[in-house]
Picture 1 (cartoon, rainbow, N blue to C red):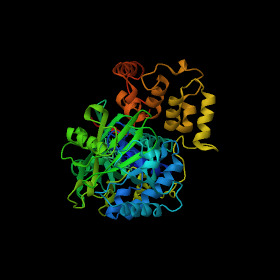
Picture 2: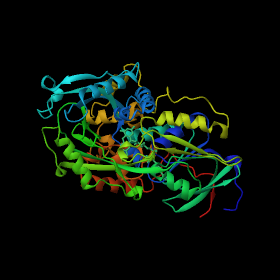
Picture 3: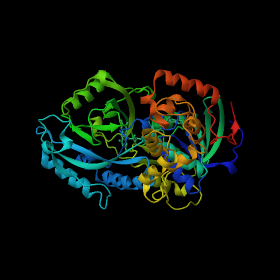
Picture 4: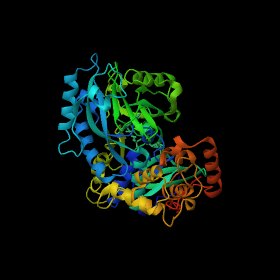
Length: 522
Ligand SMILES: Cc1cc2nc3c(=O)[nH]c(=O)nc-3n(C[C@H](O)[C@H](O)[C@H](O)COP(=O)(O)OP(=O)(O)OC[C@H]3O[C@@H](n4cnc5c(N)ncnc54)[C@H](O)[C@@H]3O)c2cc1C
């Protein structure tokens, strides 16, 4: 610890957290010419950023709490993300049934008109009323539900959005360290001396940095209080949200928004052709963030909500998969977890002459890009002169479709790789966009893709993800880098684990080869 820091090699930004906020910030900063180090203790998007409802949305519900700023910003971002990540983000129709004993129809209509008005020039359809007796959208619903409204929003592959931001950051010069934990950081005048642990080897080392960014999601409090000895003006409340997945509940691509008597809403969304995703809940979480899981009461709540609306009832025994995540929200003194603001706050702690730390409180996946932009403006006085904002227009890796967009690319891909089953090809095009050409480089037959580990996850894709996208293990491959886990059997998982043991004994991506030029201390 006593050796002098080599300030010549100091990082401009040391970002703690490989969720969407850390990833977006790393991309933005690297593209402006900053020297960036991103640390993620587990895997990319390992926690909250893979456990979302997977919506890119303004948040219709937030209108009820008059969070107009948040809704307007999120709707603007929805449009931007559609253009920079057209492979990951898809437009969807949402159906909001009216229940006589809940919010009156005029209030729903007013809210939706407001939602439309806050997105001027949007490329998405405007809201409209619908009579279920004469619309296919009413087919899955109980006969007592007579009318409702439709509006448009978007869905996203949340963890791939994280990974592709990180990939872009890397290609713009960022140093990405997955499986590395910030142990502690101390201020040495205008710099941080960060002590980092590489979990696989147990080695620790120190790195100097000008600015520390605390994007540790549910761990922001721990980073502030226990790892860097800083204090915050704000209190954080950890609020769990859970989802269940059942076999496809109804035909059609539309999603449903169910109002509940507790004034919360539950989304019911088609998921991976064969399934339906249902969520979420709001439950205070006083325990360790990593221990989060769905409770029987939450499963029951989600099933009951569905059973109030749909003809086909579901029960806990229908659940094929579930997941839970934790929102780290700013405590605005709301008594109910569901009413806490979903807006984000950036807090800068920069005592005169000392190194600054910026902490990210709250936030949505939808607003990660604009959050990063604001963070960079806040940090401008503490880093070398940097280039202007740039992320609103530049496509994420794979999002640079030529004329004709995704449909034309998909058609071209069908001609180029005719041996790929349609569903697998669609998944690959949506996951990798134009980068699919790199993944399948030189592949001319199905056999050349190697063993299938379930859901069309083949050896060649596994190799690509381990080498190019910092995948760490089979769980990471099945549930985050791809969403093929739902289609893989226990035997598939065993074969994949065996393959990883032999082909990738140490998760050592080509993307991350060189050791950090830092002092090893343990
Ligand atoms: C149930 C639920 C549903 C949601 N649905 C939506 C939605 O539909 N649309 C939307 O826009 N938003 C949604 N959100 C919000 C969104 O998911 C979160 O705002 C976002 O994922 C937070 O990202 P993050 O990067 O701040 O945190 P995280 O994704 O939690 O990332 C923080 C990372 O920091 C790492 N870390 C912590 N401590 C250290 C350390 N010491 N060293 C190194 N790494 C460390 C952790 O391992 C973790 O991976 C939802 C949230 C929840 C919980």
